[in-house]
Amino acid sequence: MQNSFPLWKNILILAVFFISVIYALPNLYGDDPSVQVSLIHDAKIEQAQADQIEASIKAAGLTPKAFEHKEGRILARFNNTDDQLKAADLLRDSMGSEYTVALNLAPTTPDWLRSVGAQAMYLGLDLRGGVHFLLEVDMDAAVKQAEERYNDDVRLALRTAKLHYQSVTKDKDRIKVTLKSADDKPAVLAVLKKEFRSLDITEPDAQDQIWLNISEKEGREIKKFAVAQNMTTLRNRVNELGVAEPVIQQQGENRIVVQLPGVQDTARAKEILGTTATLEYRLVDVEHDVQQAVAGHVPVGSRLYYDKNGAPILLDKRIIVTGDQIVDASSGMDQDGRPSVSISLNGAGGAKMAKTTQVSVGKPMAVVFIEYKVDTRLVNGEKVRHKQKVEKVISVATIQGVFSNRFQTTGLDSPQEARNLALLLRAGALAAPVDIVEERTVGPSLGQDNINKGLLSFAVGFALVVLFMAVYYKLFGVFANLALVFNVVIIVAVLSMLQATLTLPGIAGIILTVGMSVDANVLIFERIKEELRNGNTPQSAIYIGFEKAFATILDSNITTLLVAVMLFAFGTGSVKGFAVTLIIGILSSMFTAITGTRMIINWVYGNRRVEKLSI
Image (cartoon, rainbow, N blue to C red):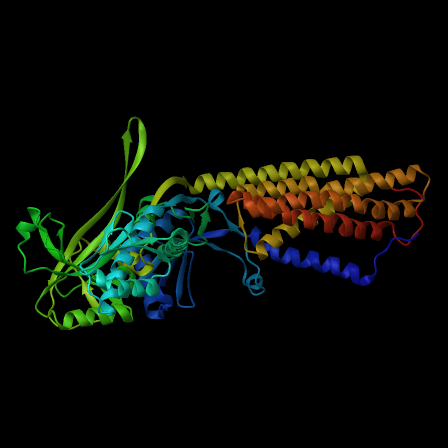
Protein backbone atom coordinates (compact mmCIF):
# COMPACT_ATOMS: atom_id res chain seq x y z
CA MET A 1 0.00 0.00 0.00
CA GLN A 2 1.51 3.31 -1.08
CA ASN A 3 1.27 6.55 0.84
CA SER A 4 1.38 9.63 -1.37
CA PHE A 5 -0.56 12.81 -2.06
CA PRO A 6 -1.41 13.95 -5.59
CA LEU A 7 0.68 16.87 -6.84
CA TRP A 8 -2.12 19.43 -6.44
CA LYS A 9 -2.53 18.60 -2.75
CA ASN A 10 1.20 18.99 -2.07
CA ILE A 11 1.22 22.32 -3.91
CA LEU A 12 -1.85 23.50 -1.94
CA ILE A 13 -0.30 22.65 1.45
CA LEU A 14 3.00 24.32 0.49
CA ALA A 15 1.10 27.39 -0.79
CA VAL A 16 -0.73 27.71 2.53
CA PHE A 17 2.59 27.50 4.37
CA PHE A 18 4.27 30.05 2.07
CA ILE A 19 1.38 32.56 2.38
CA SER A 20 1.35 32.07 6.16
CA VAL A 21 5.08 32.83 6.36
CA ILE A 22 4.61 36.02 4.32
CA TYR A 23 1.78 37.33 6.51
CA ALA A 24 3.46 36.29 9.77
CA LEU A 25 6.77 38.00 8.90
CA PRO A 26 5.71 41.60 9.85
CA ASN A 27 5.53 40.50 13.49
CA LEU A 28 9.29 39.94 13.51
CA TYR A 29 9.92 43.63 12.78
CA GLY A 30 9.70 46.06 15.66
CA ASP A 31 7.93 49.39 16.14
CA ASP A 32 9.25 52.94 16.25
CA PRO A 33 7.98 55.37 18.92
CA SER A 34 6.28 57.96 16.71
CA VAL A 35 4.19 61.11 16.70
CA GLN A 36 1.37 61.38 14.19
CA VAL A 37 0.01 64.79 13.16
CA SER A 38 -3.18 65.22 11.15
CA LEU A 39 -5.85 67.83 10.50
CA ILE A 40 -9.42 67.38 11.74
CA HIS A 41 -12.25 66.57 9.32
CA ASP A 42 -9.88 64.58 7.03
CA ALA A 43 -8.22 67.74 5.74
CA LYS A 44 -4.69 67.29 4.37
CA ILE A 45 -1.48 68.88 5.59
CA GLU A 46 0.38 70.68 2.80
CA GLN A 47 4.10 70.21 2.16
CA ALA A 48 4.92 73.71 3.43
CA GLN A 49 3.19 72.97 6.74
CA ALA A 50 5.03 69.64 6.98
CA ASP A 51 8.37 71.41 6.47
CA GLN A 52 7.54 73.88 9.25
CA ILE A 53 6.64 71.05 11.64
CA GLU A 54 9.87 69.19 10.86
CA ALA A 55 11.89 72.39 11.35
CA SER A 56 10.24 73.09 14.74
CA ILE A 57 11.06 69.55 15.94
CA LYS A 58 14.70 69.88 14.92
CA ALA A 59 14.93 73.40 16.40
CA ALA A 60 13.97 71.90 19.78
CA GLY A 61 17.06 69.67 19.65
CA LEU A 62 15.17 66.51 18.70
CA THR A 63 16.38 64.33 15.84
CA PRO A 64 13.67 62.21 14.20
CA LYS A 65 14.70 58.77 12.97
CA ALA A 66 12.47 59.41 9.96
CA PHE A 67 9.95 62.07 8.91
CA GLU A 68 7.16 60.89 6.61
CA HIS A 69 4.51 63.00 4.87
CA LYS A 70 1.97 60.71 3.24
CA GLU A 71 -1.71 61.12 2.35
CA GLY A 72 -1.83 64.55 3.99
CA ARG A 73 -0.57 63.23 7.35
CA ILE A 74 2.77 63.45 9.11
CA LEU A 75 4.53 60.63 10.93
CA ALA A 76 7.70 61.48 12.83
CA ARG A 77 9.63 58.40 14.00
CA PHE A 78 12.03 58.58 16.95
CA ASN A 79 14.68 56.34 18.46
CA ASN A 80 13.22 56.33 21.98
CA THR A 81 10.04 57.19 23.89
CA ASP A 82 11.64 60.19 25.65
CA ASP A 83 12.13 62.03 22.35
CA GLN A 84 8.65 60.94 21.27
CA LEU A 85 6.98 62.43 24.37
CA LYS A 86 9.02 65.68 24.12
CA ALA A 87 8.04 66.09 20.45
CA ALA A 88 4.36 65.44 21.21
CA ASP A 89 4.32 68.05 24.00
CA LEU A 90 6.10 70.54 21.74
CA LEU A 91 3.62 70.10 18.88
CA ARG A 92 0.54 70.20 21.14
CA ASP A 93 1.70 73.50 22.66
CA SER A 94 2.67 75.14 19.38
CA MET A 95 -0.14 73.98 17.06
CA GLY A 96 -3.79 75.01 16.94
CA SER A 97 -6.85 72.95 17.82
CA GLU A 98 -7.41 72.08 14.15
CA TYR A 99 -4.44 69.69 14.43
CA THR A 100 -4.58 66.30 16.13
CA VAL A 101 -1.27 65.19 17.69
CA ALA A 102 -1.19 61.51 18.65
CA LEU A 103 1.39 59.17 20.12
CA ASN A 104 1.82 56.08 18.03
CA LEU A 105 3.94 52.98 17.60
CA ALA A 106 4.67 52.86 13.87
CA PRO A 107 5.59 49.43 12.50
CA THR A 108 8.90 49.05 10.65
CA THR A 109 7.46 46.54 8.18
CA PRO A 110 9.32 46.70 4.82
CA ASP A 111 7.49 48.18 1.84
CA TRP A 112 7.48 44.89 -0.07
CA LEU A 113 5.43 43.27 2.71
CA ARG A 114 3.10 46.26 3.00
CA SER A 115 2.49 46.10 -0.75
CA VAL A 116 0.76 42.72 -0.30
CA GLY A 117 -1.21 43.91 2.73
CA ALA A 118 0.93 42.13 5.33
CA GLN A 119 0.75 43.92 8.70
CA ALA A 120 1.71 43.03 12.24
CA MET A 121 -0.86 42.19 14.89
CA TYR A 122 -2.02 44.96 17.18
CA LEU A 123 -0.88 44.70 20.78
CA GLY A 124 -3.47 45.04 23.51
CA LEU A 125 -3.39 47.24 26.57
CA ASP A 126 -1.61 44.69 28.76
CA LEU A 127 1.23 44.33 26.24
CA ARG A 128 1.60 47.87 24.94
CA GLY A 129 0.62 49.93 27.97
CA GLY A 130 -2.14 52.51 28.23
CA VAL A 131 -5.30 53.18 30.21
CA HIS A 132 -8.47 51.16 30.82
CA PHE A 133 -11.76 52.73 31.89
CA LEU A 134 -15.04 51.09 32.80
CA LEU A 135 -17.80 53.68 32.39
CA GLU A 136 -21.33 53.37 33.76
CA VAL A 137 -24.12 55.19 31.93
CA ASP A 138 -26.61 56.97 34.21
CA MET A 139 -29.85 55.48 32.85
CA ASP A 140 -32.07 57.49 35.21
CA ALA A 141 -30.57 60.73 33.90
CA ALA A 142 -31.21 59.55 30.32
CA VAL A 143 -34.89 59.06 31.10
CA LYS A 144 -35.11 62.41 32.90
CA GLN A 145 -33.54 64.18 29.93
CA ALA A 146 -36.07 62.48 27.66
CA GLU A 147 -38.88 63.73 29.91
CA GLU A 148 -37.51 67.28 29.64
CA ARG A 149 -37.44 66.99 25.84
CA TYR A 150 -40.99 65.65 25.73
CA ASN A 151 -42.08 68.46 28.03
CA ASP A 152 -40.84 71.04 25.49
CA ASP A 153 -42.17 69.02 22.56
CA VAL A 154 -45.68 68.83 24.08
CA ARG A 155 -45.71 72.60 24.60
CA LEU A 156 -44.55 73.17 21.00
CA ALA A 157 -47.12 70.72 19.57
CA LEU A 158 -49.99 72.46 21.34
CA ARG A 159 -48.78 75.88 20.19
CA THR A 160 -48.43 74.66 16.61
CA ALA A 161 -52.00 73.29 16.75
CA LYS A 162 -53.12 76.65 18.22
CA LEU A 163 -54.74 74.98 21.21
CA HIS A 164 -55.15 76.86 24.47
CA TYR A 165 -53.64 75.50 27.68
CA GLN A 166 -52.76 76.90 31.08
CA SER A 167 -49.44 75.13 31.66
CA VAL A 168 -47.27 72.17 30.67
CA THR A 169 -45.10 71.10 33.59
CA LYS A 170 -43.01 68.13 34.65
CA ASP A 171 -44.46 66.55 37.78
CA LYS A 172 -42.20 63.79 39.18
CA ASP A 173 -42.06 61.13 36.44
CA ARG A 174 -44.89 62.50 34.33
CA ILE A 175 -45.71 65.50 32.15
CA LYS A 176 -48.83 67.32 33.37
CA VAL A 177 -50.87 69.36 30.91
CA THR A 178 -53.29 71.77 32.62
CA LEU A 179 -56.03 73.16 30.36
CA LYS A 180 -57.76 76.52 30.57
CA SER A 181 -61.09 74.84 29.85
CA ALA A 182 -62.24 71.24 30.03
CA ASP A 183 -63.98 71.81 26.70
CA ASP A 184 -60.57 71.83 24.95
CA LYS A 185 -59.75 68.35 26.26
CA PRO A 186 -60.93 66.28 23.23
CA ALA A 187 -58.94 68.41 20.77
CA VAL A 188 -55.82 68.36 22.97
CA LEU A 189 -56.08 64.59 23.43
CA ALA A 190 -56.38 64.09 19.67
CA VAL A 191 -53.16 66.07 19.05
CA LEU A 192 -51.24 64.34 21.85
CA LYS A 193 -52.28 60.84 20.75
CA LYS A 194 -51.26 61.63 17.19
CA GLU A 195 -47.90 63.24 17.98
CA PHE A 196 -46.81 61.18 21.00
CA ARG A 197 -47.77 57.58 20.32
CA SER A 198 -44.82 56.27 22.34
CA LEU A 199 -46.14 57.88 25.54
CA ASP A 200 -48.87 56.57 27.86
CA ILE A 201 -51.62 59.22 27.98
CA THR A 202 -54.01 59.10 30.94
CA GLU A 203 -56.91 61.26 32.14
CA PRO A 204 -56.90 61.86 35.92
CA ASP A 205 -59.93 62.75 38.00
CA ALA A 206 -59.29 66.45 37.45
CA GLN A 207 -61.21 67.33 34.28
CA ASP A 208 -58.78 70.05 33.22
CA GLN A 209 -55.65 67.84 33.29
CA ILE A 210 -53.94 65.30 31.05
CA TRP A 211 -50.96 63.17 32.14
CA LEU A 212 -48.28 61.79 29.86
CA ASN A 213 -45.85 59.09 31.00
CA ILE A 214 -42.97 57.44 29.19
CA SER A 215 -44.09 53.89 28.47
CA GLU A 216 -42.05 50.88 29.57
CA LYS A 217 -41.15 50.07 25.96
CA GLU A 218 -40.14 53.68 25.26
CA GLY A 219 -38.07 53.71 28.46
CA ARG A 220 -36.13 50.64 27.29
CA GLU A 221 -35.53 52.26 23.90
CA ILE A 222 -34.32 55.50 25.54
CA LYS A 223 -31.83 53.58 27.70
CA LYS A 224 -30.67 51.47 24.76
CA PHE A 225 -30.20 54.59 22.63
CA ALA A 226 -28.34 56.37 25.44
CA VAL A 227 -25.69 53.61 25.60
CA ALA A 228 -25.39 53.42 21.78
CA GLN A 229 -25.15 57.21 21.42
CA ASN A 230 -22.61 57.43 24.22
CA MET A 231 -20.45 54.81 22.51
CA THR A 232 -20.57 56.82 19.27
CA THR A 233 -19.69 60.03 21.11
CA LEU A 234 -16.85 58.33 22.99
CA ARG A 235 -15.45 57.02 19.69
CA ASN A 236 -15.55 60.55 18.29
CA ARG A 237 -13.77 61.90 21.37
CA VAL A 238 -11.12 59.17 21.22
CA ASN A 239 -10.58 59.97 17.54
CA GLU A 240 -10.08 63.61 18.50
CA LEU A 241 -7.47 62.47 21.04
CA GLY A 242 -5.73 60.63 18.19
CA VAL A 243 -5.39 57.25 19.93
CA ALA A 244 -4.40 54.36 17.68
CA GLU A 245 -6.34 51.07 17.91
CA PRO A 246 -8.73 52.03 20.76
CA VAL A 247 -11.19 49.47 22.15
CA ILE A 248 -14.70 50.77 22.90
CA GLN A 249 -17.33 48.13 23.57
CA GLN A 250 -20.49 47.64 25.58
CA GLN A 251 -20.43 45.51 28.71
CA GLY A 252 -23.80 44.48 30.08
CA GLU A 253 -26.79 46.81 29.78
CA ASN A 254 -25.33 50.07 31.03
CA ARG A 255 -21.54 49.85 31.02
CA ILE A 256 -18.92 50.74 28.40
CA VAL A 257 -15.31 49.55 28.35
CA VAL A 258 -12.78 52.01 26.91
CA GLN A 259 -9.17 50.93 26.40
CA LEU A 260 -6.65 53.42 25.05
CA PRO A 261 -3.32 51.74 24.20
CA GLY A 262 -0.29 54.01 24.40
CA VAL A 263 -2.05 56.73 26.44
CA GLN A 264 -0.31 57.60 29.71
CA ASP A 265 -1.96 60.96 30.50
CA THR A 266 -4.90 59.53 32.45
CA ALA A 267 -6.04 62.93 33.75
CA ARG A 268 -6.63 64.32 30.25
CA ALA A 269 -8.22 61.05 29.08
CA LYS A 270 -10.64 61.11 32.04
CA GLU A 271 -11.45 64.77 31.42
CA ILE A 272 -12.24 64.22 27.74
CA LEU A 273 -14.11 60.92 28.10
CA GLY A 274 -16.12 61.60 31.22
CA THR A 275 -17.11 65.22 30.68
CA THR A 276 -20.77 65.64 29.81
CA ALA A 277 -20.34 69.17 28.56
CA THR A 278 -22.59 71.13 26.26
CA LEU A 279 -23.73 74.67 25.61
CA GLU A 280 -27.09 76.43 25.62
CA TYR A 281 -27.78 79.85 24.10
CA ARG A 282 -30.49 81.90 25.81
CA LEU A 283 -31.64 85.50 25.74
CA VAL A 284 -31.07 87.57 28.89
CA ASP A 285 -34.24 88.68 30.68
CA VAL A 286 -33.78 92.46 30.98
CA GLU A 287 -37.40 93.21 31.83
CA HIS A 288 -37.34 91.85 35.39
CA ASP A 289 -35.23 92.67 38.43
CA VAL A 290 -32.54 90.05 39.04
CA GLN A 291 -32.35 90.90 42.76
CA GLN A 292 -36.01 89.98 43.24
CA ALA A 293 -35.26 86.69 41.51
CA VAL A 294 -32.40 86.10 43.98
CA ALA A 295 -34.87 86.76 46.81
CA GLY A 296 -37.05 83.94 45.46
CA HIS A 297 -39.43 85.78 43.13
CA VAL A 298 -38.35 84.27 39.80
CA PRO A 299 -40.62 85.27 36.89
CA VAL A 300 -42.62 82.44 35.28
CA GLY A 301 -40.80 82.52 31.93
CA SER A 302 -37.30 82.96 33.32
CA ARG A 303 -34.57 81.05 35.18
CA LEU A 304 -31.93 82.27 37.58
CA TYR A 305 -28.31 81.48 36.72
CA TYR A 306 -24.91 82.58 38.00
CA ASP A 307 -21.83 83.50 36.05
CA LYS A 308 -18.27 82.27 36.72
CA ASN A 309 -17.74 84.99 39.33
CA GLY A 310 -20.92 84.08 41.21
CA ALA A 311 -22.94 87.08 40.01
CA PRO A 312 -26.65 86.33 39.43
CA ILE A 313 -28.17 86.70 35.99
CA LEU A 314 -31.74 86.15 34.81
CA LEU A 315 -32.24 84.27 31.54
CA ASP A 316 -35.20 83.39 29.38
CA LYS A 317 -36.41 79.79 29.90
CA ARG A 318 -36.66 79.27 26.16
CA ILE A 319 -33.49 77.82 24.66
CA ILE A 320 -32.37 79.19 21.30
CA VAL A 321 -29.97 76.38 20.36
CA THR A 322 -28.18 73.58 22.22
CA GLY A 323 -24.91 71.70 21.81
CA ASP A 324 -26.47 68.86 19.83
CA GLN A 325 -27.18 71.33 16.98
CA ILE A 326 -23.47 72.19 16.66
CA VAL A 327 -21.81 70.53 13.65
CA ASP A 328 -18.33 72.03 14.00
CA ALA A 329 -16.28 73.93 16.55
CA SER A 330 -12.72 75.22 16.54
CA SER A 331 -10.77 77.19 19.11
CA GLY A 332 -8.83 80.39 18.50
CA MET A 333 -8.61 84.01 19.56
CA ASP A 334 -11.12 86.80 18.96
CA GLN A 335 -10.21 90.30 17.73
CA ASP A 336 -9.28 91.34 21.28
CA GLY A 337 -6.93 88.38 21.79
CA ARG A 338 -9.28 86.48 24.12
CA PRO A 339 -9.76 82.68 23.89
CA SER A 340 -12.83 81.86 21.80
CA VAL A 341 -14.62 78.98 20.08
CA SER A 342 -15.98 79.41 16.55
CA ILE A 343 -19.32 77.62 16.24
CA SER A 344 -21.08 76.20 13.16
CA LEU A 345 -24.72 75.13 13.51
CA ASN A 346 -26.79 72.71 11.46
CA GLY A 347 -29.69 73.91 9.30
CA ALA A 348 -32.33 73.76 12.02
CA GLY A 349 -30.11 75.47 14.60
CA GLY A 350 -29.02 78.15 12.12
CA ALA A 351 -32.63 78.93 11.18
CA LYS A 352 -33.59 79.20 14.84
CA MET A 353 -30.64 81.47 15.62
CA ALA A 354 -31.41 83.67 12.60
CA LYS A 355 -35.06 83.96 13.62
CA THR A 356 -34.08 84.96 17.17
CA THR A 357 -31.40 87.49 16.21
CA GLN A 358 -33.67 89.17 13.66
CA VAL A 359 -35.98 90.38 16.43
CA SER A 360 -33.33 90.73 19.16
CA VAL A 361 -30.68 93.08 17.75
CA GLY A 362 -29.34 95.16 20.63
CA LYS A 363 -30.42 92.64 23.25
CA PRO A 364 -27.93 90.61 25.34
CA MET A 365 -27.58 86.85 24.74
CA ALA A 366 -25.96 84.47 27.23
CA VAL A 367 -23.98 81.27 26.74
CA VAL A 368 -24.65 78.66 29.43
CA PHE A 369 -22.01 75.98 29.95
CA ILE A 370 -23.47 72.74 31.36
CA GLU A 371 -21.59 69.74 32.70
CA TYR A 372 -22.15 66.89 35.13
CA LYS A 373 -19.60 66.29 37.87
CA VAL A 374 -19.29 63.23 40.08
CA ASP A 375 -17.82 63.46 43.58
CA THR A 376 -17.00 60.40 45.68
CA ARG A 377 -17.75 60.87 49.36
CA LEU A 378 -17.42 58.63 52.41
CA VAL A 379 -20.82 58.05 54.04
CA ASN A 380 -20.83 55.68 57.03
CA GLY A 381 -17.54 54.23 55.89
CA GLU A 382 -18.76 53.52 52.35
CA LYS A 383 -17.93 55.34 49.13
CA VAL A 384 -21.00 57.07 47.69
CA ARG A 385 -20.93 58.72 44.26
CA HIS A 386 -22.73 62.06 44.28
CA LYS A 387 -23.74 63.55 40.93
CA GLN A 388 -24.08 67.26 40.44
CA LYS A 389 -25.27 69.24 37.43
CA VAL A 390 -23.20 72.41 37.10
CA GLU A 391 -24.64 75.25 35.02
CA LYS A 392 -22.80 78.54 34.67
CA VAL A 393 -23.01 81.50 32.34
CA ILE A 394 -19.64 81.82 30.62
CA SER A 395 -20.44 84.73 28.32
CA VAL A 396 -22.96 87.53 27.86
CA ALA A 397 -22.74 89.56 24.66
CA THR A 398 -24.98 92.05 22.93
CA ILE A 399 -26.41 90.93 19.59
CA GLN A 400 -24.89 93.42 17.14
CA GLY A 401 -26.57 92.08 14.01
CA VAL A 402 -28.40 89.16 12.46
CA PHE A 403 -26.42 85.91 12.22
CA SER A 404 -27.33 82.25 11.80
CA ASN A 405 -25.00 79.30 11.20
CA ARG A 406 -21.58 80.75 12.12
CA PHE A 407 -20.56 82.85 15.13
CA GLN A 408 -18.06 83.00 18.01
CA THR A 409 -18.37 82.18 21.71
CA THR A 410 -16.06 84.00 24.13
CA GLY A 411 -15.71 84.22 27.90
CA LEU A 412 -13.38 81.22 28.30
CA ASP A 413 -10.58 81.31 30.87
CA SER A 414 -7.69 79.94 28.81
CA PRO A 415 -6.75 78.63 25.34
CA GLN A 416 -6.66 75.11 26.83
CA GLU A 417 -10.27 75.44 28.01
CA ALA A 418 -11.21 76.70 24.53
CA ARG A 419 -9.47 73.72 22.89
CA ASN A 420 -11.17 71.21 25.21
CA LEU A 421 -14.59 72.79 24.71
CA ALA A 422 -14.14 72.79 20.92
CA LEU A 423 -13.12 69.13 21.03
CA LEU A 424 -16.17 68.16 23.11
CA LEU A 425 -18.56 70.12 20.89
CA ARG A 426 -17.11 68.57 17.72
CA ALA A 427 -17.41 65.07 19.17
CA GLY A 428 -20.94 65.69 20.40
CA ALA A 429 -22.49 65.69 23.85
CA LEU A 430 -23.02 62.45 25.72
CA ALA A 431 -26.66 61.32 25.62
CA ALA A 432 -26.47 60.62 29.36
CA PRO A 433 -23.86 61.24 32.07
CA VAL A 434 -21.23 58.55 32.64
CA ASP A 435 -19.37 57.63 35.81
CA ILE A 436 -15.87 56.13 35.76
CA VAL A 437 -16.33 53.11 38.05
CA GLU A 438 -13.00 51.44 37.27
CA GLU A 439 -9.67 52.78 36.10
CA ARG A 440 -6.40 50.98 35.39
CA THR A 441 -3.11 52.22 33.99
CA VAL A 442 -0.52 49.93 32.42
CA GLY A 443 2.91 51.51 31.93
CA PRO A 444 4.90 50.80 28.76
CA SER A 445 7.66 49.10 30.80
CA LEU A 446 5.11 46.76 32.39
CA GLY A 447 3.68 46.05 28.93
CA GLN A 448 7.16 45.11 27.66
CA ASP A 449 7.66 42.95 30.75
CA ASN A 450 4.39 41.14 29.95
CA ILE A 451 5.59 40.57 26.37
CA ASN A 452 8.89 39.16 27.60
CA LYS A 453 7.20 36.83 30.08
CA GLY A 454 4.67 35.72 27.48
CA LEU A 455 7.39 34.94 24.94
CA LEU A 456 9.40 33.10 27.61
CA SER A 457 6.36 30.99 28.53
CA PHE A 458 5.80 30.19 24.86
CA ALA A 459 9.47 29.30 24.28
CA VAL A 460 9.65 27.00 27.32
CA GLY A 461 6.35 25.29 26.48
CA PHE A 462 7.29 24.88 22.83
CA ALA A 463 10.76 23.50 23.70
CA LEU A 464 9.34 20.94 26.14
CA VAL A 465 6.78 19.69 23.61
CA VAL A 466 9.43 19.48 20.86
CA LEU A 467 11.84 17.62 23.16
CA PHE A 468 9.21 15.12 24.30
CA MET A 469 8.01 14.36 20.77
CA ALA A 470 11.56 13.94 19.41
CA VAL A 471 12.63 11.63 22.25
CA TYR A 472 9.49 9.51 22.45
CA TYR A 473 8.53 9.23 18.77
CA LYS A 474 12.01 9.64 17.21
CA LEU A 475 11.85 10.60 13.51
CA PHE A 476 8.05 10.71 13.53
CA GLY A 477 8.35 13.12 16.48
CA VAL A 478 10.53 15.35 14.32
CA PHE A 479 7.81 15.30 11.64
CA ALA A 480 5.26 16.33 14.29
CA ASN A 481 7.55 19.14 15.43
CA LEU A 482 7.81 20.51 11.87
CA ALA A 483 4.01 20.46 11.68
CA LEU A 484 3.93 22.25 15.06
CA VAL A 485 6.08 25.06 13.66
CA PHE A 486 3.76 25.18 10.63
CA ASN A 487 0.80 25.44 13.03
CA VAL A 488 2.24 28.38 14.99
CA VAL A 489 3.06 30.22 11.75
CA ILE A 490 -0.54 29.77 10.53
CA ILE A 491 -1.98 31.06 13.83
CA VAL A 492 0.20 34.19 13.77
CA ALA A 493 -0.55 34.75 10.07
CA VAL A 494 -4.34 34.47 10.51
CA LEU A 495 -4.30 36.82 13.52
CA SER A 496 -2.26 39.29 11.47
CA MET A 497 -4.61 39.02 8.47
CA LEU A 498 -7.60 39.67 10.74
CA GLN A 499 -5.69 42.56 12.36
CA ALA A 500 -6.63 41.06 15.69
CA THR A 501 -5.43 42.56 18.96
CA LEU A 502 -3.04 40.27 20.80
CA THR A 503 -3.32 40.28 24.60
CA LEU A 504 -1.86 38.16 27.39
CA PRO A 505 -4.86 35.78 27.32
CA GLY A 506 -4.30 35.54 23.55
CA ILE A 507 -0.72 34.44 24.15
CA ALA A 508 -2.08 31.91 26.66
CA GLY A 509 -4.40 30.60 23.95
CA ILE A 510 -1.47 30.14 21.56
CA ILE A 511 0.57 28.33 24.25
CA LEU A 512 -2.39 26.06 25.01
CA THR A 513 -2.76 25.33 21.30
CA VAL A 514 0.91 24.29 21.12
CA GLY A 515 0.26 21.60 23.72
CA MET A 516 -3.05 20.55 22.22
CA SER A 517 -1.90 20.46 18.59
CA VAL A 518 0.37 17.44 19.14
CA ASP A 519 -2.55 15.45 20.61
CA ALA A 520 -3.66 14.54 17.10
CA ASN A 521 -0.15 13.37 16.21
CA VAL A 522 0.02 11.32 19.40
CA LEU A 523 -3.26 9.56 18.51
CA ILE A 524 -2.05 8.87 14.95
CA PHE A 525 1.39 7.64 16.03
CA GLU A 526 0.00 5.36 18.73
CA ARG A 527 -2.40 3.88 16.20
CA ILE A 528 0.49 3.29 13.78
CA LYS A 529 2.49 1.54 16.56
CA GLU A 530 -0.55 -0.60 17.35
CA GLU A 531 -0.91 -1.65 13.71
CA LEU A 532 2.79 -2.54 13.59
CA ARG A 533 2.36 -4.72 16.69
CA ASN A 534 -0.56 -6.45 14.97
CA GLY A 535 1.78 -7.49 12.14
CA ASN A 536 0.84 -4.96 9.47
CA THR A 537 3.49 -3.67 7.09
CA PRO A 538 4.92 -0.17 7.72
CA GLN A 539 3.10 1.29 4.70
CA SER A 540 -0.18 -0.29 5.76
CA ALA A 541 0.32 0.85 9.38
CA ILE A 542 0.85 4.46 8.26
CA TYR A 543 -2.26 4.40 6.05
CA ILE A 544 -4.51 2.74 8.65
CA GLY A 545 -3.12 4.92 11.45
CA PHE A 546 -4.12 8.13 9.71
CA GLU A 547 -7.49 6.78 8.49
CA LYS A 548 -8.63 5.21 11.76
CA ALA A 549 -7.48 8.03 14.05
CA PHE A 550 -9.27 10.75 12.05
CA ALA A 551 -12.72 10.21 13.63
CA THR A 552 -11.31 10.36 17.16
CA ILE A 553 -9.30 13.50 16.36
CA LEU A 554 -12.35 15.18 14.82
CA ASP A 555 -14.58 14.37 17.82
CA SER A 556 -12.09 15.65 20.40
CA ASN A 557 -11.41 18.87 18.50
CA ILE A 558 -15.11 19.59 17.85
CA THR A 559 -15.90 19.40 21.58
CA THR A 560 -13.06 21.85 22.35
CA LEU A 561 -14.14 24.06 19.45
CA LEU A 562 -17.70 24.25 20.79
CA VAL A 563 -16.42 25.41 24.17
CA ALA A 564 -14.21 28.03 22.46
CA VAL A 565 -17.19 29.28 20.41
CA MET A 566 -19.27 29.63 23.60
CA LEU A 567 -16.43 31.58 25.24
CA PHE A 568 -16.35 33.91 22.25
CA ALA A 569 -20.14 34.30 22.14
CA PHE A 570 -20.71 35.01 25.83
CA GLY A 571 -17.32 36.27 26.98
CA THR A 572 -16.06 39.84 26.95
CA GLY A 573 -12.70 41.52 26.56
CA SER A 574 -9.78 39.24 27.34
CA VAL A 575 -11.99 36.12 27.33
CA LYS A 576 -12.88 36.83 23.70
CA GLY A 577 -9.19 37.26 22.87
CA PHE A 578 -8.41 33.88 24.40
CA ALA A 579 -11.33 32.28 22.54
CA VAL A 580 -10.24 33.72 19.15
CA THR A 581 -6.71 32.34 19.39
CA LEU A 582 -8.04 29.00 20.64
CA ILE A 583 -10.50 28.68 17.73
CA ILE A 584 -7.84 29.54 15.15
CA GLY A 585 -5.39 27.20 16.89
CA ILE A 586 -7.79 24.24 16.90
CA LEU A 587 -8.61 24.60 13.19
CA SER A 588 -4.98 25.09 12.16
CA SER A 589 -3.76 22.21 14.35
CA MET A 590 -6.19 19.82 12.67
CA PHE A 591 -4.94 20.95 9.26
CA THR A 592 -1.24 20.68 10.13
CA ALA A 593 -1.48 17.42 12.14
CA ILE A 594 -3.56 15.54 9.59
CA THR A 595 -2.35 16.95 6.27
CA GLY A 596 0.98 18.63 7.07
CA THR A 597 2.46 15.73 9.04
CA ARG A 598 1.19 13.19 6.54
CA MET A 599 2.71 15.10 3.62
CA ILE A 600 6.14 15.01 5.27
CA ILE A 601 5.78 11.29 6.13
CA ASN A 602 4.71 10.58 2.53
CA TRP A 603 7.83 12.38 1.26
CA VAL A 604 10.10 10.26 3.49
CA TYR A 605 8.37 6.85 3.46
CA GLY A 606 5.92 6.93 0.55
CA ASN A 607 6.39 5.20 -2.83
CA ARG A 608 9.16 2.88 -1.59
CA ARG A 609 9.67 -0.36 0.27
CA VAL A 610 10.09 0.24 4.01
CA GLU A 611 11.25 -2.41 6.45
CA LYS A 612 11.09 -0.41 9.68
CA LEU A 613 9.64 2.87 10.92
CA SER A 614 11.49 5.25 13.26
CA ILE A 615 8.61 5.68 15.70
